[in-house]
Length: 244
Length: 366
Ligand code: HEM
Ligand code: HEM
Ligand code: SF4
Ligand code: SF4
Image (cartoon, rainbow over the protein chains, first blue to last red):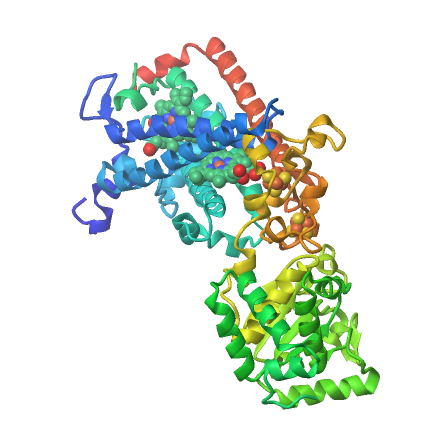
């Protein structure tokens, strides 16, 4: 430990961060992993994404015609309004989550930073793949995210959500107009795709990446809850419990 | 050939246009730019005193629809004035001279107005096979384009061809046609996309440049902000039906007759920057959506290559398959869903058959 350089100090060390909860001793160890802001963010974020996914899909497909005068209806307007409001919640939440990654405990950084350059990471990913391929009988006992989950979160969640926020606000800027801050801040997206039809297409494809992530994620947390006793309640209480 | 120090005013007076008409022209111009009442007299003053700006108009690989649109400008005065001005300099489509005579005029204009003329380009250069797919005066057009651009002050890219490439650059683009900003990189370029651009937009731009002697303010894509800062969708008169969620589902349904929004019929208004819904066409008579047809997105980059004009979702070609985002996404999510279900099933079976495994874990220190 003492011989290491500063950058390698315990909080950044991927193995030390997630060491099994030896401190608490006993069989069913508990460790405080997900701090309150992370938990709160997780559920707000999940709710926002649910709203964004449903309303986004409806925006993409259009709704069946409502009868009556146009002045008496605002269905599509409300759907879009819900999408944009949830978009703001997601965006602001994501910024706060980044802030907490810097201020919070080392686990808070996990979804933003995967030290891919360390060989131990790949060993752990390999072990985790063996676990999910039914080859290992012994589940991983780390307290934070397992390495595979961390990879999925980094590549499928963090990256995709960043992309969705950037393209989402760029599209929003089109409606808000050339003088809006959204256009000033995110208008560069249209330097990459001059035809905003492409931005719509990629933004739409992002929906399916998020859906796929959510599918695997929810399955994995339920399965882990049953199979290795890594309880779902970690995202509620913050305590990582190993129930055996 | 007119002298280098001539003013706009002296030219149009020589063309037989009265002073009264000239002032009408100035106030029309001022209002079309959205400027206040005082601007008309400022424009008049500029046109009477400043040397006029020569315009040279070249034609590359194109269909001439831009010229066709231009000569149909709603205000006859503007049209006459500008056409006579432009044909004074060079436009091989509408000028009287032809053949060697025309070539001589072009060369003369280039030398006489060196660094002071505006080069208006309709169409674009194909680059494959050394540019042999478009020969102009015995040489590849791309050479003439470079040569004329070299001595120009600024370049106007007329239409979607010159701005983005348009149909000749659509996949698989056998001639290697490229928008002109791929060839001309050292001059300011104004893009005026549209297939064709609206006549009033074209005449408005030429008037602006000849009047003020500079280019108007451009957006990130190099288009004049005064005509391209809003989408068709932003000023569409069917927008209230869009917000209400009232969409046409088929071309001859009840909703189509009621004039509902054409979003589901693939209208590209929400992604298309152009002035159609504000200025309309043919002197303000109508525009596609008013006639019951969705917008094609004709003023947008690569609009030919985005799948059907009648689909809401764009076809994605990047993955070697022609599917839209929902088809690709649902297939991927479905495959992952099946994998998850299979994984869950195997887990359940394993758990039922290998119960004793759990005992192994107990003896590991945690
Ligand atoms: C019923 C729904 C959900 C449940 C039960 C659930 C549960 C959990 C649990 C237990 C964790 C901790 C995982 C671990 O320790 O490795 C977690 C983390 C996470 N979940 Fe969910 N989740 C749900 C929905 C979602 C949705 C819809 C999303 C977004 C698409 C999402 C995104 C995340 C992210 C990004 C993390 C990492 C949190 C962090 O470290 O900051 N979750 N979730
Ligand atoms: C998980 C995040 C998100 C998902 C799954 C999502 C999904 C979608 C989908 C599927 C569409 C329809 C695209 C189309 O076919 O044209 C859409 C449109 C749009 N989204 Fe999102 N979106 C997300 C985040 C955001 C954010 C953060 C914003 C920012 C405010 C945003 C703003 C927009 C806008 C402005 C449109 C275009 C609406 C229109 O054209 O009327 N989105 N979104
Ligand atoms: S018809 Fe097209 S441009 Fe008009 S509101 Fe509907 S989608 Fe927008
Ligand atoms: S409505 Fe759309 S397709 Fe039609 S001319 Fe205007 S921009 Fe082009």
